[in-house]
Amino acid sequence: QKEVEQDPGPLSVPEGAIVSLNCTYSNSAFQYFMWYRQYSRKGPELLMYTYSSGNKEDGRFTAQVDKSSKYISLFIRDSQPSDSATYLCAMKQGAQKLVFGQGTRLTINP
Amino acid sequence: GAVVSQHPSWVICKSGTSVKIECRSLDFQATTMFWYRQFPKQSLMLMATSNEGSKATYEQGVEKDKFLINHASLTLSTLTVTSAHPEDSSFYICSDLAETQETQYFGPGTRLLVL
Image 1: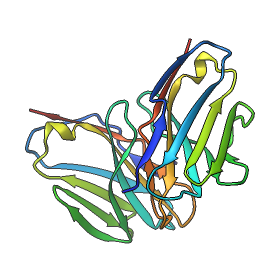
Image 2: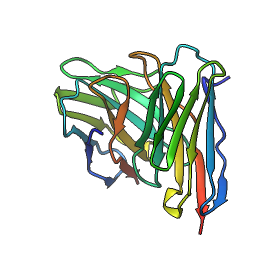
Image 3: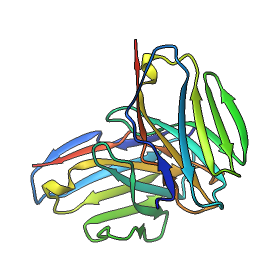
C-alpha cells in the first residue's frame, strides 16, 4: 500500500463547476499537507499549504484536512479552463522528505 | 512563495556526454535543496537531497557517480548527469526547503533529451 493514494483521473468537468480533488494517506504522523498545481512541462507550483486538521481558503481554492480520517481535499470553485493541470497532493512529517500522491489530471471544458 | 530558478530549461545532448543543470534559490539562502526526476504522466521521484557544504544524500537506486550533485553555496545547487544515455532523458526538477522547513518550492524544471 502506498503511503499516499490519489486517483490519477483523468477528471473532466465543465467550466464553472466545483471540483473536488482528494488524497488519502496511511501515516498518521504526517503534519504538513500541501497541494501543488503542475502545468504540462512546468515545475509544480505550491497552491495551498495547511498544518493540522481544518479548512483553509484562498480565493477560489479551499484545502481541507481531516487527520482523523487521514483524508485531504482540495476544492476549486467556479472552475476555469486555466485550472486545467495536474494536481499533486503532498505531505510530510517534520523534517522528513515530502511524499507525493500520483497526481490527478484535471481538464476544465469551456 | 520562494522563487527557484533552473538553467537550462531544456537541453539536447549526444549519448555519452555530460550535462550540468543549475538550480538557484533566488530569495533566501537554502541550506537544503532537492533534485527530482519526473517521467511522462508520473509523479515526482526524489533523486537526492543536497545540503550546502556537505555530500548529497541519494535515494535508493540512484547512482551517485552518475548523478553528481554539488551545493557549494547557499543559493546554488548543480546536478551533473555524467555519460548521459537515452534512458536518462527525463524532466529534472529542483526544489528548495522553505525557511520554516514545513514546505518546498519547486523550480520550473529542465527537460533533458539524450540522443
